[in-house]
Image (cartoon, rainbow, N blue to C red):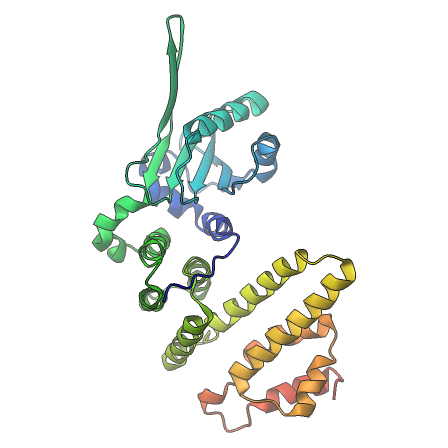
Length: 346
């Protein structure tokens, strides 16, 4: 099986996970720089400032870049430019671009930035870390921090023993690379890595953040995704935890995001609205099917008559409905009927 379903915005999960765990990212990848920072003072993401220096940059490639203001232990302000190179193909002018961004920050804001790169590609030999030129009367040597995720293949034991969230991030990335043509094995690793989150005893918020990253990067074909879903849903229910619907909630959130992305590709405004409504209906009906089983035709008809706002509200509410496999004494559909009654749709 070699079917692959690429997701368009692989930079998004990196941006999200960097924002959620920025101190841990620095301590994991760049410990020497992290040691300079006073983490008791809040850090600040300078998205607006970074957009100002990249407006004239070349188009056609996507990056997960973050410009961050932190405070040194001595009390001085310090700017960090974190770049995650996600593209599979190494870029010839990468070092020049790192230098250009650094120079633009200094030119526009008068702030020297510490430039750091996380290289996610699969080429062992590509390891840019400097840009320089040398003439008889003028020379320049610009060096930036650089880590290669491939290097962690030889440090797997360290990753498994680490409680830093970026150990999980790196494991998910490496196993995604290694299973490009072995998607059955990818499913196994995806289940194993997500199960590890529970075994570590993480908080609900941390499980959801890391689950979301793993789910976005470890893409599976629909058939394998359905198998994974059933296996993992059973695993969560066996745990009998208060947040049993972790996977279900994230699956619903991802479905909404992908529906929005598809809607943006529609031609006319009316077509977009109609497509979004139909997409939301299909998503809610799928989630209800998974959660409470087959729906009577009259109930399905009622759902299809809901407005977009009502469908979105039902999509959130259904995550707390009783599930068939939980062995409740009440009929699983009772929660749905009560919701429809309360919202005056039956």
